[in-house]
Image 1 (cartoon, rainbow, N blue to C red):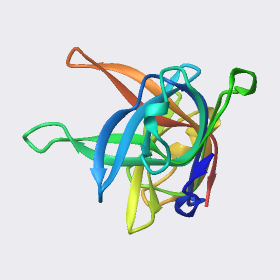
Image 2: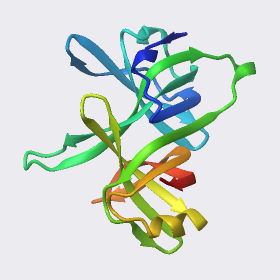
Image 3: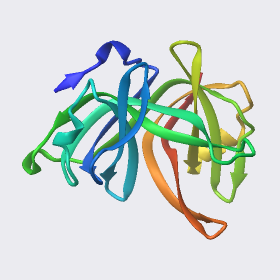
Image 4: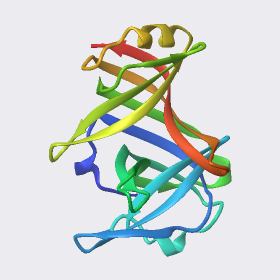
Length: 197
């Protein structure tokens, strides 16, 4: 097991165990460090992950490999057109990684946000309330994470205002949808527990 524990902040923690969807693909280079992307299959969800070459030799991984990761749920605005339009891209930035065999394999999908701020008016429809929260990280950056709440959590979330600070626990889920006849995948936090600070 390798890790970059010094970069792990307790404010935004993800633990996921699943199977690799495919071989790793090159994503980008930053300050001379190469990063690779993939998705972990956890039940019916496909969770995007980003890993540094310093953490693991990605050539050793193939489709179906069972692995566990610990990291942060990060976001950035990805330009999707020449007109300057952007799309919020979400992924788990891997800080720690370990391998499992079939006998040890138990799917895990957990995210804990110890401090997040509502940064957009809650959107309510039917029995669902959607939130967008900002989670601070180092170097004066923030991650913008969409959240979905149901039941009692949806009633609480509907009363939140921009600037309110919350804690939450849940799981990362993927959801397919059609836009302009193109199939896309959205990622969000399904909130299981929520507490207003």
